[in-house]
Length: 134
Image 1 (tube, rainbow, N blue to C red):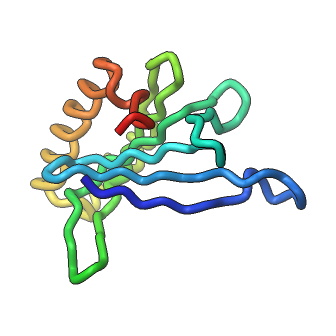
Image 2: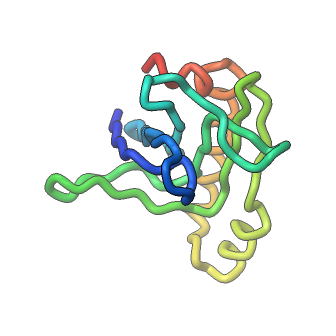
C-alpha cells in the first residue's frame, strides 16, 4: 500500500482551518482512495451541500514506481462515498468518451470496469469508510 499525505486549506478564505488529504493506492488494484481528515485525524465530509462525501475514489491504473516517484493514470471514473457507506459513480460519460476516442485502451477500459467492481465490493463491505483505520 502507498500512502501520500498533503495539507490543504479548507477553503480559499483567509483564516480557515487546514485539512489533511490522504491518498491511498494498493498494489495491483485499479483504484485509489482519497480521504479528507481534520488536522486532529478525524475523517470528515467535504463537497457541495447535498453531495458530501468522506472518500473520493479514482479508478486508475495500478501504482507504478519510477525511482522514488509513484505514478498512476486516472481513468476518469470516480466514486464518491458518504459516511454511511452510500455512494454514487461520477464521470461515466467522460470515461465512455475517452474510450471511444481511444484515449483509454480497450485493455485499460476492461481493467477499469473490473477495478470499479472490486472497488464497489470494498465500499459495500464498509472497507472504504474505515480507511482512517488503515
